[in-house]
Amino acid sequence: MTIHFRTLTLLFSALLALSGAAVAANDYSGALKVGTTAAFAPPLEVAAEEARKQGLKVDIIEFSDWTAPNVSLENGDIDVNLFQHLPFLHNANKEGNFHLVAYAPAIINNVGLYSKKYQSIADLPEGAKVAIANDVINGGRGLLLLQKAGLIKLKPGSGLQATQADIVSNPKHIKIIEVEAVQLARTLEEVDLAQGYPHYLRLSGTVDPNSALLFDGLENPEYVIQFVVRDGHQDDPRLRKFVDVYQHSPVVRAKLDSFYGKLYQPGWSQ
Image 1 (cartoon, rainbow, N blue to C red):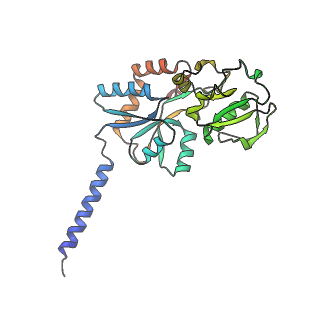
Image 2: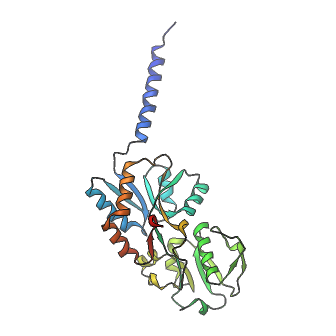
Image 3: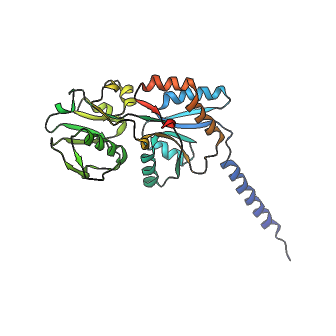
């Protein structure tokens, strides 16, 4: 029997490479990279500082849209992101063929209907211009808000992914405009009513986040914002430590209270 030493060497090298890749895939020794958006960054920065005091280095990476955080997470450029609720995550996985899973709850925020021109929903004129989010999940949330306000009626059974095609009644003939969710706060100078996210309104300084004509309430647990990771990375000890700091540090809780005011609740207590 002839032994092909070169063949054995190549096979051994390949096995070593595969072994090294497996180790690298589970190497949790570096800084924890957390992706987020402006609406959630300030409390995360405080949590990162508190985590560093416990020996955990954390890098906060802020994104300006709601697409890049999931792309970056799927590609392994970051370890976890915090900006989305479960309906948004499930749709993102479907649309992007991602392999992302919820790891732990963060907070739930109120979303409301805001106006700089009118003091009540009843004051809205015929043909009023109304802005809602343009993505399928948050747009559906906006339509449900408009239905709660009595401005439209949706087909029975229309849920979180309702679209304008599901509208069966629009007595005031409101004109619904779809806008990127992070830009909704800036539409209030141009429209009569807009779906609004309190944290973006606060950052833009457009209106008082507490001044919504109607809120959708904090009773819907599906809207709790989640820490999200790539499937298979749930055992990251850095993540477990950081989430514990975020959820239980009094310093972080004080920042959450000051940043969101009364328009949020801790999702882990839902």
